[in-house]
Image 1: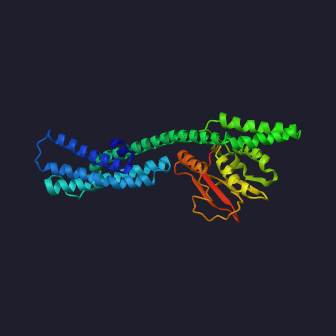
Image 2 (image 1 turned 90 degrees about the vertical axis):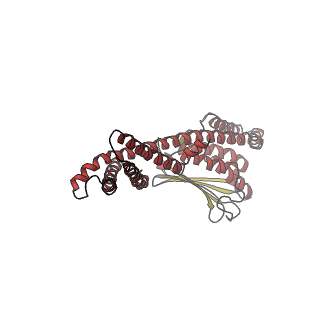
Image 3 (image 1 turned 45 degrees about the vertical axis):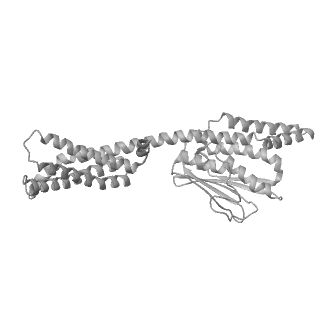
Length: 355
């Protein structure tokens, strides 16, 4: 368990590898010196050389972290150049210590000598850089794998909670009661249409894979089925407008992403307004992100902390935030804020991706 926690702490893991790696380098150098007749003081030279390599690679780590997202050609060029510069500095330090302590080698006066002496050091530095990128890339793959596993788990939980709501007796009672009323007044065509919408909505929620991402246009179609069902209860009190750009409609979103948000708007806004209320759904592409907004004109102005709005801290919103985090890591935002003049505004920002 302690080793697992240690591996998850990237900073500690780096320093352990860094220390062990350069200690191993010093050990290999010492074993190699045993085949030759060397004075005892040569051990100090070996340790100082390993320590110099240890110190010189620390700045490389922070540099590589900053340029990680650069293009492969530019990244490779910078790594190559920095590895050689570090090797050249290391060669100077190594030669100076050998002359001053071991009284062996050449005084620093010939640049060509340093260039030749740097080549061997360069291979070591380049190997260190390669290992750094290989390990970091492996860690990224593990992160993506863990995110995918977490996303599957969270999506399944989201689906279960969504189904629990959909099969909620109040939801089914209100819907079926509305259909029954339509049948009693001989509005059979309307009742059949309502039943078809309910059937399509439940079928989608049952058949659709929770981890699957679908175009926003398809997500809105399903949400309109849900809203049409709710309109049976609220009739003209529930108004819905959409403003979605063509490029945004093609963006991929987690299935049933908007249902808990719209549910909250109906519960905390529409249901509390006698004259009815409005839900606005807007979406556009903003740079490399897909920005989705769901706004309502609830009866109370926004005055609570950012994470809540008139008690809107239920399972739905919390689960949506956790699901986005599992799917996108740090590349998302989910914010609640005030809508003008009244109501709540939910903003979702995720990477814009298309099929």
